[in-house]
Amino acid sequence: MNRRGQALVEYILIIALISVIAIALVNYFGGYLKDAITKTSCSLVDEEYVKGEKPGDGYCKGDEDTEESNES
Image 1 (cartoon, one colour):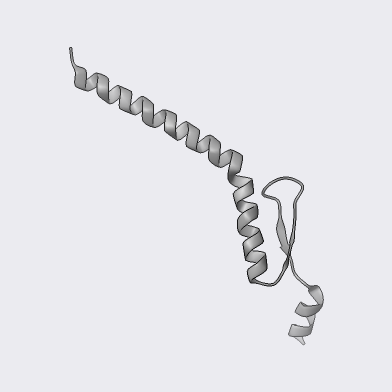
Image 2: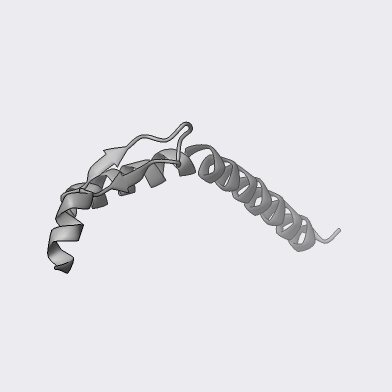
């Protein structure tokens, strides 16, 4: 029997399983990661972080008065 072919198939199955798990984790935690990055970027540009209805929907809200005074 060809053991090398069997080992190759086993490696492919392991890689496929790890890939499926990685994709599931990114889908599950992706919104939380996006919110964490958005919070950090809001603090860097001195804007207020507004939490969204679900994970990943948060955004930065700037001060409109400051923007208008900068334009004139």
